[in-house]
Length: 191
Image 1 (tube, rainbow, N blue to C red):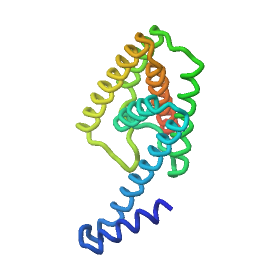
Image 2 (cartoon, one colour):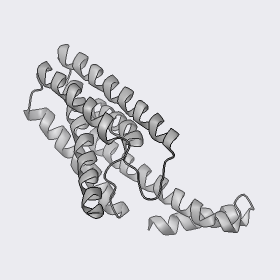
Image 3 (cartoon, rainbow, N blue to C red):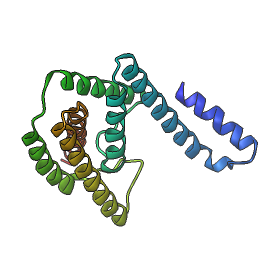
């Protein structure tokens, strides 16, 4: 379905001579990613609205999308699995925030451990998106800054008793888990 939509959009752009024929495959792939991202994001937002957790949903999306854009990590083989993983992570994060309180000392531990992980593992390249050494350094710095920024924001939310603190905490943990999942998968391929 996503491929058909992406092909139709690209065909119209080729027909109007906005895109050349030899660039069509690249545009199809880009539109598939964009459409998949759009549907997953809208789906998560709709679920958040239905559950009465709109602000928490926005915080989850901001933390998850911004950080994952620079850290890399696990990527599903199909768009359906990607959406399923995103929805599942969102569900688990919401569930944990309802039942598991996050004390400030856990944030301090997360900050220390997460910083070490960012320095050691990030960025994890996707096979379709190779990075130059300069890009890797830039992504590592941005990842570290974003991680620390979200950690501090989460601490402040927790300190003032906002449920957004737990959302940020569990979303950061989800991102770290996806980093380890991909990192471990890569090590297995190399052995």
